[in-house]
Image (cartoon, rainbow, N blue to C red):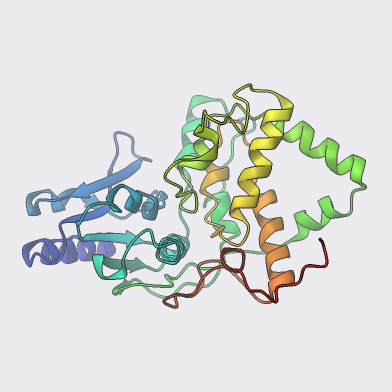
Length: 301
């Protein structure tokens, strides 16, 4: 990955020197060997800090929201799953394409620094020694969807086995079993909102869960409020989840959030026909649940 790092630095230097971008977003080395962190470059002198390595796991597209109200032109590095997030932001009118310079990297699979930190701390019992992050084992898009420059060799999807096998297990439960499963699972939630903060599709300016007047969902860490939080969030993700898996990865209590999101992906594809969020950028195109037509089916009313 050293070659990719050097190319990213070369591109960032060129873009900043030619005044094509005002800021370039990538990764820099963290304090531990297994850590990287998002890095925002505005000066050519800082370009040497940019890296791309086996721990460059963060989805940088989420940071574009920090610049949506500015006039800054932004260059950034994206992996395959990250690039679907850019399509989401463009479709949501959160950013203009002409303000972006996208450096795509074909992703061979990334290691999860959180796993390694837990292993080294002794908190992971038993230790997890998988080579790549869990989310990478489900990845369908290792190669960027949208980019201005592409780095690295094209990669094959890393996913193995049937895509929705876990979902079918839940679907085959009777209603009482299914309710009990989700009650037991979501009771563990501590309402830290890490899943919301890391999600590129959660781009509302004021989140419904932060509203105080009216207060739609209670602040209590209770089964009822936890289930309401995840139900409302899931409805907002329908047709919009890019399956980057960051929500599940950062969850401190290991709630299998992608079970819920994958069920939504499966149903959206079933009801709206061969639809995958963020897989193609067509200017003006919206996700199915973001548009309304007078002749939409209304048999459920």
